[in-house]
Structures are given as C-alpha cells and as structure tokens.
Image 1 (cartoon, rainbow, N blue to C red):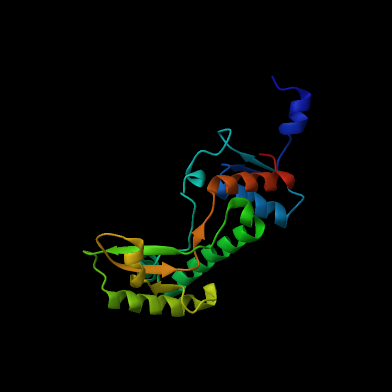
Image 2 (cartoon, rainbow, N blue to C red):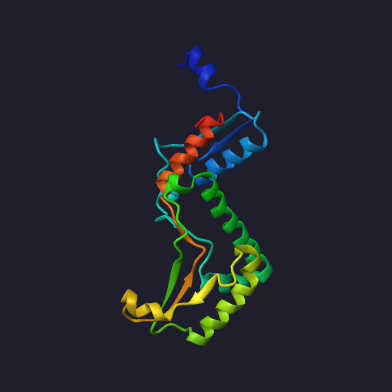
Length: 193
C-alpha cells in the first residue's frame, strides 16, 4: 500500500515518463527539461544504477573511424554521412562543455590500425584521408581530421600492422562518471529519477 506522502512525493501525475536511465534516457530528460522547464518528468530505471551499454562502452568518445565513414558515405551518401558526423561531433562538444574534466574527458586523438593482410594500401588510405578531410573540414574545423601515421608504427611497436591512420578530434571519457554526473544534473533540474 502506498501512503499519501509517497503518492504526493513520488507518484503524482507526470507529463513525460522516460523508460531507461542510461545515456539516451538522461540526455532526453536533460534537453526536454531545458526546453520546457515546467514539464514534470520522471526517468524510470530498473536497477540501482544503469547497468547496460551506457557504462560499458570502454570510454570511447568518437565520431567515426576512417573506414567506418568511408563505408557510411558509400551506403548513405556523403551528405548524410557528414550530417551524422556533425551530430556526433556536436555531441562530444556538448559533453565537454557541460561536464569536461568532471568525467575525465580528453581529446587525445585516436588511431585505426591496418594489418599486413588488409585490403587497403598506403595510397588508398591517403586518398581516403584527403576525401574525408575535405568533407569534414566544416564540421571539425581541422584541415586534417585524418592523417596517415605510418611513421609512428615502429615507436608504438605494433606487430603485423602495415598502416595506421590518426585522428585528432576523438578521445576518451569515463562513462560511469558521465552517467553519474548527467543523472545528478537532471535531478538538479527537477527531473525525478
């Protein structure tokens, strides 16, 4: 049986109920509350802490690897791929703006490795880098979002690796800290979790 106090504090009529307290649910609550502060919003989570993909993504803060984006451009077209990267890139900027050091966010860059038996030649990779760099310059603000970094292979000591592509726009964060901080933020905005 629910007491009148529990009913008034926790079970009043809500404008929006979001099922799932992971990144998707909490970001949805954040932006809904930001856009319409008067809304009564509740986020329902089945566990004491969200225990799913949100806290198990290894901390990658990425917008897409060279080969992923080349593939996407071939499947969905260059314009849609650029739009998708723009959304991801803006998402990383928003995380950095709202939470930054609090979630160990760092744009340390990233690398994509290509094995000795891989289908890509150095010339292919240079061409792909040039193609994507031209397409993504307006999104990332960089002339060289991707670059061939084969000279670093020996320093890193990767065996059976013939090529390496570096990107400077990506990085890492602590997904558990981000989820915790995002949860605290939405609660401070009046969202019930």
